[in-house]
Amino acid sequence: MKRVLVLTTGGTILSFRTAEGLKPVKEDVTELLNEKLLKLSGEYEIDVETVFNKDSSNIVPEDWYIVKDSIQRSIDKYDGIVILHGTDTMSYSAAMLSFLFAEVNKAIILTGSQIPLSYKDSDGGKNLRDAVIAAGDSRLKGVFVVFHDKVINGTRAYKRSSINKDAYISCNYPYVGVIKDNKLFITQEYRDMKDKEHDAGLKILELKDKKIPKIFVLKMIPGIEASLIDYILKEGYQGVIIEGYGLGGMPVDNKELMAKIDLLASKRIPVIMATQCVYDGVNLDTYEVGMTAKKNGILSAYDMTTEAVYTKLMWGLSCTDSYEDLVKLLQTNLCGELAVRY
Image (cartoon, rainbow, N blue to C red; front, side):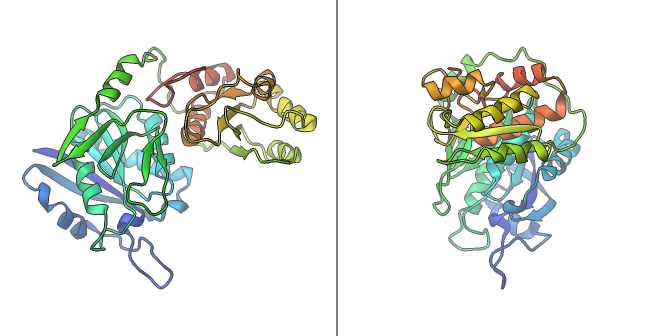
């Protein structure tokens, strides 16, 4: 019999109606979860542990380390781990846990729901059961999101809908698998992708401490003010992610803005260009605006999601003080987050 630990952190799946609106308020939800898992009885031994109770909009980076510690305390005793999580920031948590557990040899599965588990029309029961099935499957190693029958690499999950039960897509990467009739089917596209990934030579870095580096995400908009860079410098941000246009465009005619971004690079503050587009990633060698950005020391996120870049940079800054090592880390695929380099 497979042993699976379910860690609860709150989210819609464990929310209840209150005078202030839906929110996770009950500490002990074991009875509710066991009721939804009855169909799996006899095949899985399931334990439940509460980590914290939060709407995932209230998740902060420190919470990722609390979850990490809960996983580390228990993972040797179980075949896999399920984490119940709110959908709004699940992509961030899944990405960060992917880097924190880049060498794990079991499945760590995040799931949640669009409708609370206590509601009759909830998608939570199905997602929960599917997550347990995936967690107990020895073919999966790493961190994944399971949602609406699909298994998604933890660094590639992207929430596309605020209401639809089919809320997540796999961004720029094959779906890992699908779950039908309580069975996991791994896709051939994922197998082929895994065969092509070849960056395992980089030694996974160890955390020096659990300090949370300050990272600024700067979204390009028409007429953006260069003074935002002054704020970034004044507040001591240690990394900047630019969400550029398309393949990595930004207003290079704004000489004041470019000069100040060049100042960031001269101070060896990593500046990474991501894209506001969902699909296909960044290529700084196509347009003049991208090539100019590259000449100013801006690094490419390639086909990584903003969530993956943000958490990878945060993790990397917590592992090394070397700018060169950090750049190498950012440009190396560790757990499926980086598949295409232009």
